[in-house]
Amino acid sequence: MDVHDAIVAGRAGAAQETSELRDALLRERRARERAEEALLLTRFAVDNAAEPMFTLSARGRILDANATAARHYGYCRAELLDLKIDDLEEPGADGRFETVWPGLDDGGSAVVESSHLTRAGACVPVEVSYARFRHGGQAYCCAAVRDLSERRRAQLALRESEQRLRTLVDNLPAAVTLKGRDGRYLLANPEFERWFGGEPGSTLGLTCQDLLEAETARDYVAADERILAGAPSAQWEADLRTAEGHERVVSVSKFPLLGGEGEVVAVGSIALDITRIKRIERALRESEERFDLAVRGSSDGLWDRPDLGGDRLWWSPRVFELLGYETGAFAPTHARLLGMMHPSDRARFADARRRHFVAREPFDVEYRLRTRSGEYRWFRSRGQAIWDETGRARRMSGSIQDVTATKEAEEQRLAAVRAQRDALVREVHHRIKNHLQGVMGLLTQYAGREPGVADVADRIRTQVNSIAVVHGLQGRPSDGTLWLASIVNAILQAARGVYSHRFDAELDRGAMAGVELAEQEAVPIALVINELVTNALKHCDPSATDGRAVRLIPFVDGRQVGLRIVNAGARLPAGFDFAAGRGLGTGLQLVRALLPRQGVELRFESAEFQVAVEVLLEEPVVRRKRPDPEPALERAER
Image (cartoon, rainbow, N blue to C red; front, side, top):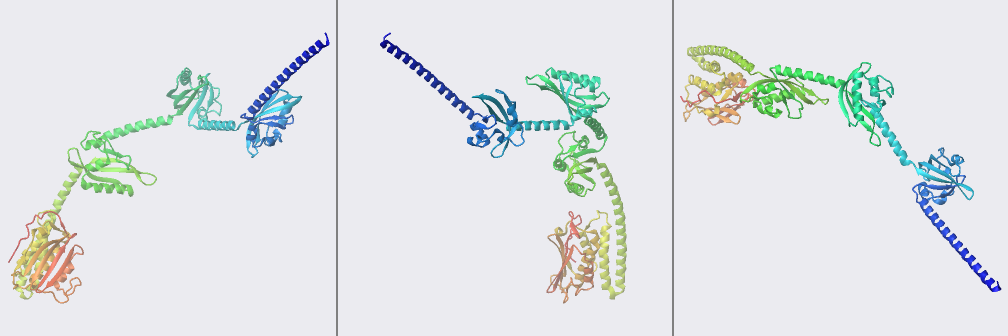
């Protein structure tokens, strides 16, 4: 090979080496670029990981920390690089790096729970995963931190929920159990264990055959088998007899407890002791039977108003029967009862209820109710209310009895007594009137024999006549009513027999029609009218131009009934004052003394040659009762 060929060959070899070197460099650069890209991706993944991540030295110093760690602990990354991982530990917490690192081999890992502090001082429960690795002949550690706050809260909530459930089950007034598929008790609350006289936990692992009488146990085993076979539930009531011979009536409900695959893994049971309820139900049935028998066997009707604030009533069949209706013909209400009640009796009924509710007086009242036929019948109702803690009557019940026959018999008895009494009273009045007429006859004879005292005798005779008139009217066979018109008529008739003066009675039938005079005031009022009439006749001027020396004019003034007595040709004495008792003669003094304190008023008027007096009568002296059956006062002249 010459020099030229050698040079060419050398150049070719050099070119090849250069090419190979260039290719190697290119491959290295590409590998470096891929490594850098992978590192960037890894860095990006680490920085954006959901959990804080650290790279630690063998002494636990933080060599690197991701962005999540900075955010989580509240430090910037540069501040974290000045700390050890143990600087983040809560003082006294378990799981410090210095205790974990010695136990790690290369490639080994450990997971510990601890508590870390943030820069703000918040304590955070954490789970730290440590992984040891080697690089460049040096040992390092990678730490990933998981915040356990949510898990701890969930665990706490679960424990609290379990505790509440356990407290609820332990305090239920029912026996709660859970059996496995083998029929042994896995859970039993205190009530169940109390039923069987055991200590807490003494029934766990036992079967119902261990606790119950054989026949009762067979029923429970059969129900468990139905639940295990797929039945959704089972409920029944049964007599539970324990192996020791104790008995109780229970209401049992069984249900399945399902596993993750939907399979039945246990049988739950809730049993409620209803022994007392059954006794109460039995007693209630017996009480209802007794009540029904009492209601059907009683002649009285029973009623109940369960809510005095409402209108609803309950009536026994006998109440409907007493009123002439079929049982349940309508729904009874308090408003309907008042509608059936006689209007005159409603106030008495309401007053009896009020006195019972407020003063707690016995409720015992009689009233009339309209029956289906339209007839009113008398009933006696008695009842008793119940008051609440505030003293308000809330319910009332009682009985009702038809007392029509009793009332009618009592009315007949009273009518007979009244008739007998009235006959005796009339006889007494008749005899008094006869004696008074005898006295009047003696006065007339005396006046005839002694002209000097004739005027006084006549005056006394007219007064005695007024009393005799009242007794005469009361002695008549009537209803005992003293009509004002009848008394005035009798007084006028007696006056005509004594005085010869002309007088006129312009009496309006409507003014005195139906006016009744109170019995206890009859004699005083008759004497007052008699005295005023005779006084007017005595002092009048018989030569009055119209020929009427005295006039009597009845009238009505509102609630008052009046009698106006006009005396022509007379005048009142000087200083006359009837109210003060001045200027009164003997007659007017008697009138003033006889006037009742209430219901009577006298008015005197004096004009030239005329005196008028008005007698005004009102309750309680008189009252309008009904049309006067007596003949009207007629215009009379003499």
